[in-house]
Figure (cartoon, rainbow, N blue to C red):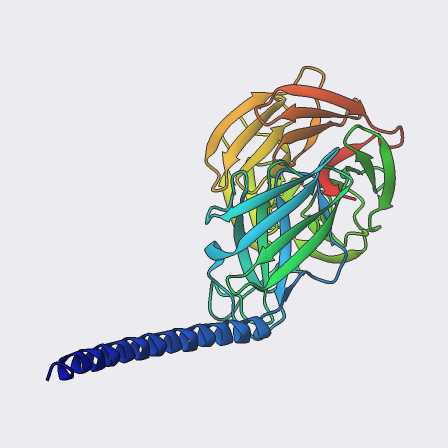
Length: 391
């Protein structure tokens, strides 16, 4: 009998151990099956995911923010942008700065943030063709336009890279060139656009269409140029190489267009004989207008950074600032020598105003503090508008 008790205890311990081992094995097997399933799902998502930059060479303007386009060339829908990893490698004078950007829903990202400006069926045309199905989701075949604000900022005449990583681990590397910023000044007398570097060095010229013989104002968003003709009341659109692509008629009361600007989504035009700012879509269809403040009666130029609008008044030598709905914000006076302003432009960091009498360009900071000026080349003696674009 004394031998039976130990044997029973041993058998019980064996059963307990076997049960524990079996449970552990089953739990481990379940864990392996779950992990394998997750990995298979992740692999399937990765296999169906392909994002790329457009095939064209990318040249961007040196500024605090950079705008990049990605194409969904796979068969998987993409979203959850707050969980994307975005890494910027920005070439500096002696080293490469690496920045990790976090996602924001603001359309004006702060330092080391990025945002989604929009998703489009096509992002290369103007106006961009908005997505049709599943708003906010990057479906196969669609393009997303991202705005990034890496810190430190990009430097002119460098090559940089941004890596986008989706939550499934698929990456897209976008390499782009930072080209020198060029200032374009349109001359009404000789129907030519003159290009300068920001230090005033003359760069090149381009001819306007023969019908655009009284050009007032010029603008661009990097996808072409627009000018206003004071005589025929037409808006002229050109390609980036100044080939005429289309014209459109200004609204009936917008009879003497004096300045034009765009944010890539809308176009605004000032008028030489009435104190209104006229808003058009990118194909030139009139949308609405707003009245300027009482003192701002003779606007000869207009510009926008997408957040605010500035007009320059040729009579009182003052720049007036409005929000995008047309509400007056504040103003600043031009420096004394800049007494005949006929055009204004901004890159969001500085403001440039062109003077028709002394044929010079004056540079200000965003609060209106005068910085410097340069004289236009001799042939550019009738400057009527100014804009900026990368080469």
